[in-house]
Image 1 (cartoon, rainbow, N blue to C red):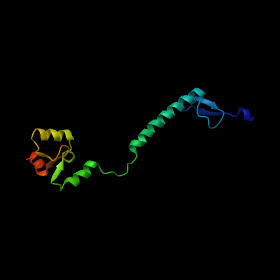
Image 2 (cartoon, rainbow, N blue to C red; image 1 turned 30 degrees about the vertical axis):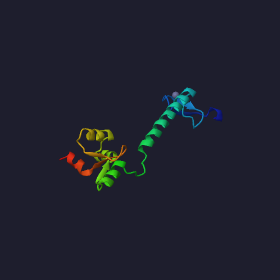
Image 3 (cartoon, rainbow, N blue to C red; image 1 turned 180 degrees about the vertical axis):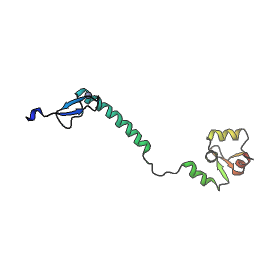
Image 4 (cartoon, rainbow, N blue to C red; image 1 turned 90 degrees about the vertical axis):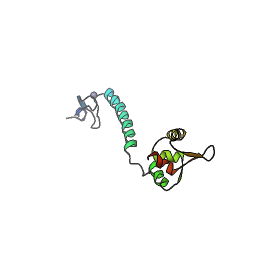
Amino acid sequence: MSRSTFRILKQCRNCGNMFEAQKVTTLFCSHKCNSANYKLRKKLEKISEVGKEITQPQPFKPKVSALSRAMLQDKDFLSVKEISVLLGCSRQTVYTLINTGKIQATNLNKKKTLIKRSNIDKLFN
Ligand SMILES: [Zn+2]
């Protein structure tokens, strides 16, 4: 038995065909299958990388809303932004509530609108 006739029967990783490999490390029956699988592997790598980003445990970061709600508990006067956090709605919604008279607000100046906390409570009475 000469070395040149050394063959290993392997199954192609790409098409599944049995073929005689010349090297133990050969995984594909042809160059075509090799490059096809390479492309597929790259694609899968990309997908798994994306998956990693999603599934990777994130460092603990308290939600802004959760944090703010706790901080807002004891405040008597709240800004529109704080109200939106408190109510879990958009600032636009808060402005709508103010404009429709459902929430009584005070304009300190053009940029700052304050709402008394009890006015928010009245919303739900
Ligand atoms: Zn193949």
